[in-house]
Image (cartoon, rainbow, N blue to C red; front, side, top):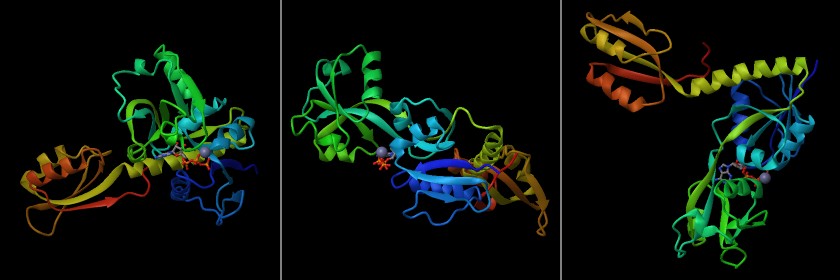
Length: 285
Ligand code: ATP
Ligand code: ZN
């Protein structure tokens, strides 16, 4: 039987979350430390541990069938692969930053300036879209020090909290690209591998859906039931069971994490008591 080869980042910001999500799909594999490949125990899959920058290339060539990689790296690599789903982690943005004391009013101020980055393609696309000509200096690491050593007037780099920029005397002036980790696949997968991928996606989606929802149990006086049920538009209508205590019921439902606290507040106001909220492991429609 064929095995699906999934490439993930060997060591870095995407590694732990990638492994966690695979494990949550009930796919486990032997400790990978120091190894390049690890075969899963109960699922026809092999995990390849690579540098994130190499993943798009390996997936394009079919050395790996699938890969988990940041959209920043994927778009910059310009490889021909299919994006299958967004993973919901590894979120960051690519931004332009300039020295804090620079008088910056718009991106036009960067015209004819030197910009240091590890993302020349994404930056060039952005500058083209704004009709701006600037000089791009490609450097592979520590981009944020370029202005202070006189190598560039501005930088384009990954930002998450902005504290690295701050400590290098820079300010973020434009967000040019939003990124998160995505699952990509090789374009010519065999039928057999495509079938394994569908099984994997079924699991991934039920895990991701579960993470966005919570199971809720509460007690309600019967006269408040109608109001409470109207506040709980779960996947199915909620389960309502009588409590031993006369005139009271227990209500069970699934609610989304979105507006979660607001919903809890409204349930309380409607008369709900003893509200119990639990995580869901898998959610299958
Ligand atoms: P490798 O050795 O595999 O090349 P790396 O140093 O290029 O690793 P990491 O810093 O581990 O990469 O980041 C991997 C990916 O994580 C980034 O390409 C990006 O998609 C994502 N990411 C999320 N948040 C951040 C952040 N705050 N800083 C950098 N990358 C982030
Ligand atoms: Zn990298």
